[in-house]
Each structure stands twice: as C-alpha cells, then as structure tokens.
Amino acid sequence: AQVDSLVYAFGEASSEEDSQGPGGASRAAGASAAARAPHLINTNDKYLFKVWGLRRSAATSGWALNNGTGSKRTVVAVIDSGIDYWHEDLQNQIWENPGETGKDRSGYDKRFNGIDDDNNGFIDDWRGWNFREENNDVMDRDGHGTHCAGTIGAEADNRVGIAGASWGARLMVLRCFGADETGKVTAPMSLILKAVRYAVNKNAAIMSNSWGVKDHYYMLETLIKEANQKNQLFVVAAGNDRTNNDVTPTYPCNYRLPNVLCVAASTEDEDLAGCTNYGPKSVHLAAPGKDVFSTLPGGYYGYMSGTSMATPLVAGAAALLADKIGTAQEIKKILLQTADRRAPYALRVGVGGRLNVCRALARVHGADEAACVSAAPPRRAAFVGLLIAMAGLPLAGARLA
Image (cartoon, rainbow, N blue to C red; front, side, top):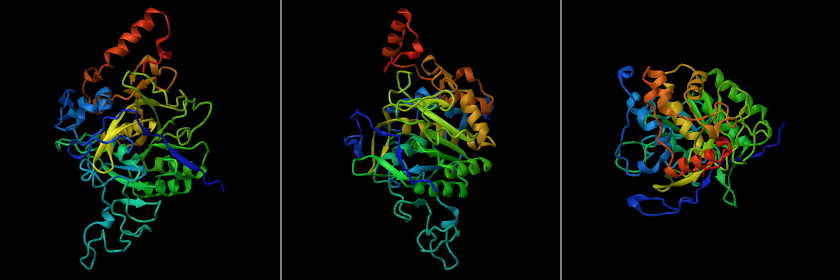
C-alpha cells in the first residue's frame, strides 16, 4: 500500500489587491451554428472586463457559435475545496443529483430526507459530497474551489460579477481540500481518490483538477483509466514549481493517458507564468493563469494566480464542446489542434501554444477559424518583444511579464 501523501492545490492569491464584494465592497483577493460567424459577445456582467483570460482565449467570440452557454447536460466535477453555493454568480450553476432530488415515496424532499435514495453510499448528496468532513455540506471555506468554479461556469448576463467559460455547464461539488495551519490548501490522497471515484460513478463529463503530487499513485491512474473508458476528460494542472515535468514528474499531469489534459499557466503579456511547470512531453498547452479574476466565498471576487487558475478555463472550454463531441479524446484533440501557436510556448508545452476557445468551437461548428482572433497582449509586451527581436535574442526564451 502506498503512503497517503499530502496533495497541494496549485493556486494562490495574487498580489493584485483590486477585489470586489457584494455591492462593490473592497476586500483582499486572498480571502444554425455553421452559418454563424465568430463575433464578440458582450454580456452585462459587472466585472467581465477584468477577466482578461476570456478575451485572450477568444472565448467571448466563440460564444456566438455555441449560443453562448453550453449545455446544462454537461457536468463538470470540481475536485477541490468546495464551492460557495450561495454566491450570486454560482448559486444557479450547481449540479443537482437526480437521484437525490424530487420527492420520495412518502412525499418528502429527497434532498433532506436523511435517506440514501440513489444507493451510492452517500446520504442526501444532492450537490455532491464533502469528503473532508464526511457530510453533504460542500461549502467552500478556503476560496480555492470557488475561484476555480467561477472560471468554469459563473452565471452570465445577470448584471453582477463575471461570466464563466461555459455558463450552461453544471458544477458537481466534491470537497476534499482545506487550508492547513500555514494557509496552504491541501488534501490527503485518500480523499482525492474517493472524490474521483464519485465523479466517475456519477458520469461527470469533465473533471477539473487544480492540484498535484510528486508520487505516482497507481490507484489514481487506474481511476483515470476507468474515466477514459467512460469518455470522461481529466483536466489537470501542471504545477507551480517552475520545473520541467519531463524531468521531475508531477501527477496526475505525467500520467500518459489519452483523457488527461495537462495545463500550464500563461500571462496577459503572452508568456508562460513565472510559477508554472512546463515540459513538451508531459504538459499539453498553456492557458491564462496569472492574475485571474473570479469568484470568492461570501459573494466576493478577487485575483488568484497559478496553474490552478489555468486549469478551470480549459475545463470550461471542454464543457462547451462536450455536448457536440462524442469522446474525451476528441475534445482533447480539438483543444490542442486549435491552440494559438506562439513563440514563448514553443518547446515548453506540447503544442507550443495557448488555448483558443473560439477556434475550438469554430472547428466543431464548421465556422471560419481565421475569424477567431484572440485579444492582443498589452502594448508593453509587444514593445519589449520588438526590443528583444532587434537585439537578436530568441523571443521564446524571453520573460515579458
């Protein structure tokens, strides 16, 4: 039997202090489709302008191809510290277990009747399960899971907050992480294995995993293989150690399985984030993960950074494709084939590129991929890149942020 290692979440509060709460109160961040052409969709969400990752990945243009939302049939399991299910931008986005909702034979609400109505070993698990405290209260007390959840599927066009990549997807809440005495968000592998087993059994189309460990767990690998057989995509974070995963493995990123999609973090200046792990053989693509603005517990919003923040954007993009594509492998293939190839990612991640949600959707809908132009980096990045080019230095190795 393997030692029950402590697993770390790969996200932390950004240095950026501009965070909003209910009513704009300030708080620190730590706390026919083929006929359509891609075009920018502007929702009425109050802080959408702060979510640079949606623009950089061209998601706001891709929404036009997918009627914006994605399907409510698509379930994304968030294996993390829980979700603030009362948050104004998340309360309508939480998955409900069909076996634990509605009325039982006695006319009682299955959500609260104290009975394991779906016979899966969990009583009243109508939103998911709290493996940390062994109950059905999946409230996030640490912020990490709520932040990831907002990036995946925060409600759009509700005049508050932000919008997630896939507004229609439903979020299965699996709480196994929590903050230790130093503030690090961790979980024992034994709890993670239980959470992954739950998501596999409940047929979540996508699993978002913003965490990792150095040990190779064969039980975890076996579960992911089972998920592959059920066409479930396992989106994972590359890690925040600034190391090459090809040399020093991080799991589950380094499991060479067809349904594992490993994500590095990129910056607004179109470079790899300083914290991110990389590796052209093990890390597949990059996605925005530096100074990401998203939801926080208590109705707040704030910035966090890390591959934890890049992973849910890719999970949200996958959710937009899930009801159009039959297999997890095909979703992965399209996301990789349609990434924006850029010099800073060459030889650092497998496809040498960064997520482009619009191009992926255009590929699926038969629309013009050339119209899917991601937002340009800030002018300072282009200027620095020009200076580097003039100096004859390799742009791929430059740190622009």
